[in-house]
Length: 40
Image (cartoon, rainbow, N blue to C red; front, side, top):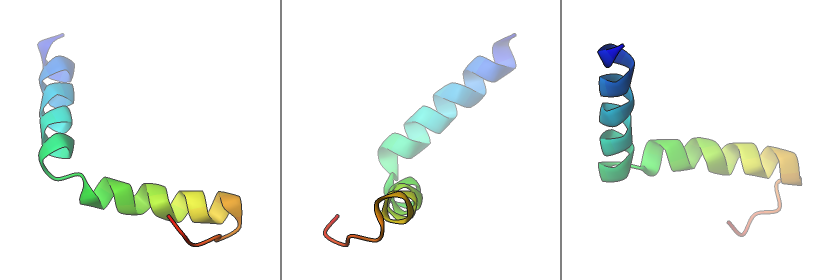
């Protein structure tokens, strides 16, 4: 029961400290859904 909480906490801290890889994935997905409209 503790392991999932520890993993989630580490992921939250990791994404907070270094968010760029996740943001790149989100930008790519948003461009695909919105038709590649660019300005994001």
